[in-house]
Amino acid sequence: MGVLGRQEVTTAAVPARPTHHEPGSTNTSRKQRISAATKSLTPYGFVAPSFLFLLAFGILPIVVAAVVSFTDLDITGLANPDNISYIGLENYRRLISDSDFWRSLQTTGIFIVFGVPSIIVISLTIALGLSVSSSRLFRVLRMFYFLPAITAIVAISLIWGFMYNTQFGLLNYLLTSIGSSPINWLSDPQMAKVSVAIVAIWRATGLNIIIFLAAIQSIPRDYYEAAAIDGATGWASFRWITFPLLRFALLFVTVTTLIAWLQFFDEPFVLTDGGPVGATTSISLFIYQEGFSFNRFGYASAGTVVLFLIIVTVTAFQLRLYRSNHA
Amino acid sequence: MRNARVRLIGAGLALGALLTAFPFVWMVFTSLKPLNEARTYPPKILPSTVEWGSYLTLFRELDFGRYTVNTIIVVMVGFIGMFFMAMAGYGFAKFEFRGRRAMFLLVLTTLMIPVQVTLIPTYLILNSVGLTNTVVGIAMPTLVSAFGIFLFRQFMETLPTEILDAARLDGAGEFRIFLSVALPMSTPILAVMTILTFIAGWNSFIWPLVIAGQQENYTLSVGLALLNQQVSINPALQMAGASLMVIPTIVLFVLLQRHIVQGFTMSGIN
Image (tube, rainbow over all chains, first blue to last red; front, top):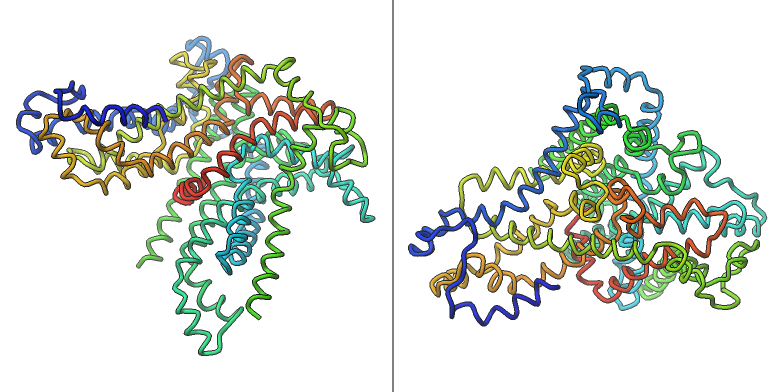
């Protein structure tokens, strides 16, 4: 907002007085006006700050991770570089034989296999419901569904953790009051996976509902009218009109949701800290723990490189699908 | 017939919406309960008396005042990043220069690199320049996002070049033109980005967790995550902390709903 305020004040003063330069621009470029100005260093001046930040925090980390993954960098190496030594592929060799690493990959796989379809079915169902009317009520309802998407995951996890509590939590109270037996939401290894996933699903639907809704509303209404004349309504019109035309949105949501599960971190970190006995340790949590709980930076970097390669593969696959869908 | 169907769907959706919003209601109610009441079993929905004690404890006995200030600093630094992104978007949209395509492609490449991949190496990078254990360091890794640059570029491409050229003829410097001509014409995208930047900074968790180091640098999210260890001790306090984090974003959302939904739809997932 500060930026906005300043420019409103300065607008009036523009033409009147000569102004100082952008550091990158030169005197000659000003004199020769537009054509020369665009050839000057000015554009680099505009782009440089962002570009340098992206290089430092987007590209450089990949290089650093790759280099560090060939070393035994730990807390002593952080204090004194003399304690770092090159160990070749040792970290990767250990990773392959580390059952914790494989379990975290497997856990992430389970989250993807069950989480992706759940999020898609729930979001699409709600979006279809919301699309039947554009009345005020329906617009207000849309807001409610979107709420979890903008609130802090830590706060959300805490709220759910309180509801899951086995001593005085609300959910077990509701279960027992309808005659069902209480559930060990977070202490049973199988159930903990489900409980943690429920929170993530609850949070992820809001955004995907909006994406699906936008896609559904962009389908021309006459398609449905023409189909109705031919006798296709309800399920048939969904199956043969809506569904095929949502193909692109479905693909987009599938891939982004899949990548989101690959990055799954906050909910298990707050709710279970990866437990019980590692049942909810995702690949991201595994990397975090190796790095910051055990200070094995070299080893964690090897895990990082593996996760990066997985994500690159998924993204490349996504791009291919996009292309074949556009062709 | 159609009306009955719409009403039925509306009722179903309303039920779902209440279920979705219920955890937030439960959070607020619990935060206002006296300590013992928050832990009673069976739980009561409404507090018998409204008590603000938990909120006071957050600020008096715990350091949430400091965490709030730190969070606001992180958000503010984020706005500097937003300004950089606007500059870059303008540069890519309105100038021809050598390497533009290649640079923009590199910007887009960083879109597919998630936080978790850069976690360890970024920590090592920040550590080597002495920015770990600082509040400013927390905001660094996410200061500039490829997505923000992309959004600014998309919008600024639509700005009429004639107006920019007219300002040049009047002798305005390039940076002045950006500040006084291009930015004021870009208020719609600035509105969207302001909200997204606020939400991203306010809610950020993983970087504060990794970079903050000591308690005096904690943000609300990290302070809140640590309250979790007190789960069996004081749920009212936890829910007060959660409310402190969640309510500002909900208020902002209700006020600026349209911009937020638009922004998030453009951002895909984030």
